[in-house]
Amino acid sequence: MTRSQRRLLAFVVGLATLLLVAALLYMLGMNFIEGESRGFWRSLEFAAETLSTTGYGADETWKSPVMVLFVVVLQFLGVFLIFLIFPVYLIPFLEERFEVRLPKEAPDISDHVIVFRFGPAVSTLLRELEQAGLKTVVVESDEAKARRLQEDGYTVVFGTLDDDVLAGAHLESARSLIANGTDDENAAVILGARQMGFTGEIVALVEDPFHRQPIVLAGATAAFTPRHMLGAALAADASQKVSPTVAGTQQLGKKLLVSEVRINRDSAMAGKTLAEIGLSEKTGVTVIGQWVGGELETPPSAEMRLQPDGILIAAGSAEGLRRFEEICGGTRLRRRPGPIIVAGCGEVGSKVVQLLRDVGEELVVIDRVEGEGVDVVGDVLDTGVLEEAGVSSAQAVVLALDTDSATLFATVILKELAPDVPVIARVNRAVNVERIHRAGATYALSISQISGQILARRLLGEESIAVDSQLKVLKVSAKGLEGSHPSELGIRERTGCSVVAVERGDELLTQFGSEFVFEPNDDVYVCGSSKATRVYGETFPQV
Image (cartoon, rainbow, N blue to C red; front, side):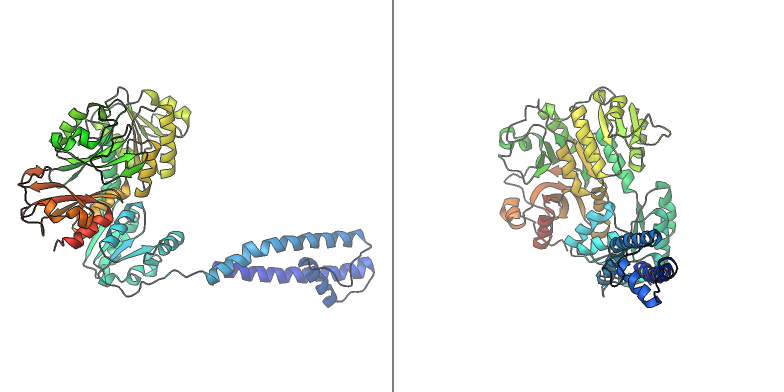
C-alpha cells in the first residue's frame, strides 16, 4: 500500500469515527438538553448534513446555548474538512493513481552505457553519447530527477541498489558503467556489478582524491576527480604562476591549445574586423568564436568585428598564443596588484586555494562557515562581506560556489562593485556558462564540460574540447582526406566544420598554403557545433 493510499484510508476511518461521535453527541444533547427525542439514524443524518455543509432537514433551530455552540463547532469543522480532504488526501491519491509509474526495468537493450545517478558531471556526457548514437540507461533513486529525465526522453530505471536496479538496467549486456554517486555509493555499485559477473569497463567520478585507489580496488577500470580538475583550471586562470599560464587554456592533443581572451576597451583590436587585423597570418592563431554579451558568435567570418569586453576563443600553439598576446597588447587582462579573492571553500574552492597558496599567491578566502584558512566569514552575496574582503583592490575573484544561481548573482554584484576586477566562475551546468558570461564573468567553466570531455574520450575514443553546444573542437585522423587540400574537399560546406590545425609529427600547422595536402598520419583538428562534428564523422568515417 502506498503512502497516499494509507493516508486516504486513515482519513476515511477518521471521518467515519467523527460522524459516529458527532451523531451520538447530538442524540444525547437533544434527548437530555433540548428535551426532544432523536434516534441514532436521524442524529447520523444531522451529523452528515452538518459536516458536509449540505444543509439541514427537520432540525434547524435549538434552544439551549450548549447545543447551539455544539452545532456551530460542527459547522466550522465541516468547512475545515472540505478544504482539507481535496488537497491533502484526494488529489495526491488521484495523482498517484493516474501518474505514469517510473519503470523498474529498461526495455530490451544491449551494448548500452549505464549511468548510475544523474548530475551535472554527466549531463554533457549523455548528450555526447546520444549524438554518437550510443544508447544509455540512467539508474536513479531520486523520484523527481527520474521523472524529469524520463520527460526529457532518457531511458530511466528507478530504484536503489537494494531493488536490484543493475539487473533492471540489463547490466549483463551493457558495454560500460559510469558511477556518479557519492564515493560510498560508487564503491557499492562497482562491487555489486563485479559480483554480478560484469567484465566491461567501469568508470567512477570520485569526490575525494584519497578515494581513487580504494575505488579502483573495488573494481573500477578508472577513477577521475573532475571537481579537482575544475579547481586546477580555475586556479590556472587566476594566476600566471599556475601552469598553464595562458588564461582559460585547455590543451588538445600534443600541441594545440584552446584559449579564451577578453578584449579590453583600451585594446588596439577593439572595434576592428578579423580581416583588418590579420591575426591568423601574423600569429598562426585561429579565432574560432567570440563571446559577446553572453552570446557565442560562431563560426567567425573575416568581417566579424571584435567587440570591447568581448571574449575571443582562439586555437593555436603555445608560441602562437604568446605572439597573439604581444600583438594584441591590451586584450589580455593585465596583472593587477592585490590579493586573489576565492569565494567558496568547498571541494572545488579548496583545490583552488591549495594551488594558489602553493605558488605563493596572496589570498583572501570567503566562506559561509568559519574554518581553517577562511579569512572572511559571510555570504558572498552580501556587499558588506565583499567590501571587507577588499574586492575593489583585488587582482581577481574566483567564484567556487555550489549553485549556478548564486554564481550568477555574485557576478552581477561584483561587476557593480568592482567592474575592472576579473571574475572567474565555477559553473555546474554547461547551459549556464552563457548566462554567467553575460553577467560579466571573464572566464566560466563547468564541471559537466570537464567530466564530459574526460568520459567522451574514455568511452568514445574521442579527444575534444566543448566550449559550448555551438562550438566544439575535435581531434580526428586524416582518414578520407589524404592527398587533398582543405578547400578541395569542401569540408565546411559539407559538414559545417572548419579545419583549425593539423598536427604533423612535432609540428603544428595552422596555415594551409596552396601546396598543402593532408598526409595519412596527420592529426586533424576541426571545430563546429556538436551537430556539425557528428555530421563530419558521418561524412568522413574514422573507422
